[in-house]
Image (cartoon, rainbow, N blue to C red; front, side, top):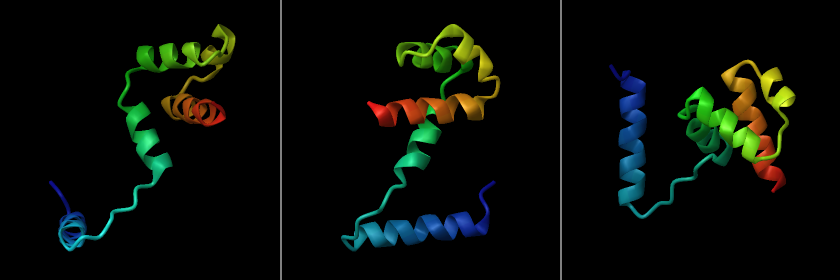
Length: 77
């Protein structure tokens, strides 16, 4: 269930948007969410396509580490 604070935040965002305001999106948070949605195989494939070696990919054991590395490599391009 959603907490009351989350519901209030959503309501404020809807009101702000309906009044013509623009919603600022944190690009790093959006990218983190996007790449965390991928399963491990998809994350590994993405890292491989970005030029990481098999040993470098294997060293990234945790999802958080893989996601950070993907974002870091995407910024470099």
